[in-house]
Image 1 (cartoon, helix red, strand yellow):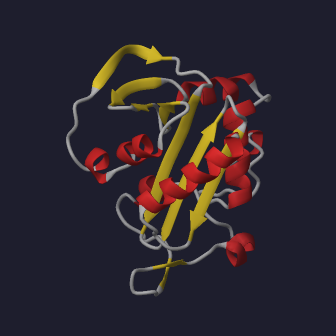
Image 2: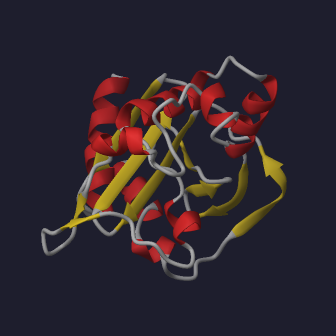
Length: 188
């Protein structure tokens, strides 16, 4: 991944293990007690925390998701992440990305990113085969750990996207509301 995929995506400051040379740029998060924290080592730490990146590389990743023109195998992999496998209400779940028909209301995004969807059982409709979702969608993903919060959303048809990174775990609802407002302004 570090030797092949990340360079092909143009992600030069994205790491699985932050090297010593980049540690000065590795941010601390802040806990609820306002204490500096980093991700904690543990049994599933690598799987849960995955990659460490910054806003510039994450924006480059969003751009690649909207208009990747490089390696054909990477392009095919990106397109696969835009296919839908299941739907829950107005949200379609792909391989990582969740998507919504665009334009999308703030309430639909809030519902799809709510604890009721994330932490409770919901009726799910599966597709017989992966479903092409197309560019007339809003793709999004939230992420949180103790001390950090993130939200990424983009609309390929409009060529707009947003990356929100915080070194504090702000509520997902606040992130979604802010991003929806910004994207609505950019789309006009």
